[in-house]
Amino acid sequence: MADIGFIGLGNMGGPMASNLLAAGYRVKVFDLVQERLDLLASKGGDAVESPSEAVRGAEFCISMLPASAHVRGLYLESARDAALIDQIDPTTLVIDCSTIAPYAAREVAAAASARGIDMLDAPVSGGTAGAEAGTLTFIVGGDAAALERARPLLEAMGANIFHAGVSGAGQVGKICNNMLLAILMTGTAEALSLGVANGLDPARLSSIMRDSSGGNWALEKYNPWPGVMDGVPASRGYSGGFLTDLMIKDLGLAMEASAATGKGVPMGSLALSLYRMHREQLDAGGLDFSSIQRLYGSGSGVSGG
Image (cartoon, rainbow, N blue to C red):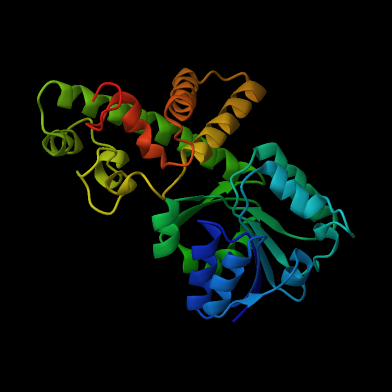
């Protein structure tokens, strides 16, 4: 099995690296948080002290980081020695699974290409549950041949793999997907709040809408009303999952893409405003994004409930 360097072991990266270990890959792991390193080491990972060590001798380098600045900082900048991109062997395939701005993905990919290194941007959809279950969706930008080389690794971590196009296209696909997800979640929360305020049971209303023309992913897989669906953040105080802060970040990326192309996204803009209001009024940045239900009211004593 291949040797992999995995950098970034947060809520998404940690489970992804665990699935690679479970599939039999040899994985060197790095993160700034020692507890995360210790957890992966307990599962068979080789915990190392720097990104340089993680990529040394690796056939694949996978990164999962919070934002564009972190990805650029990892690959293109260094406070101590050469930038990481200059330390990666040209035979290593780099796969960045972070969700970042398309221009940042293209910039890093261009720097890799100048060194003769193949790089894919492969942001994911599916949340922490998908990361843990190995059922993520990968939306990939970059060379098709490089994707085929990476496919066995991606299949160890996910259930769906889409080739969106050239470098940066994976990020465009992810940004569009998450903008739509935010719009669907805010609309679902609004409809549930209206129905409950008018006397309907939230579970019954969810069933009606799910099997009618209002059906969507939030109703089917990720209901935002507490207690309606088992195993989702809404039924555990909106803990875990995909944080409101991260949804705001992704919607901000959508606004950047909109400005760059002059393509208006009024519903995406409204969703961003609602999520910012949610964070500011209810201190919800660290809650799952489905907690937007609380902004509308969810029977919890918050406005509209």
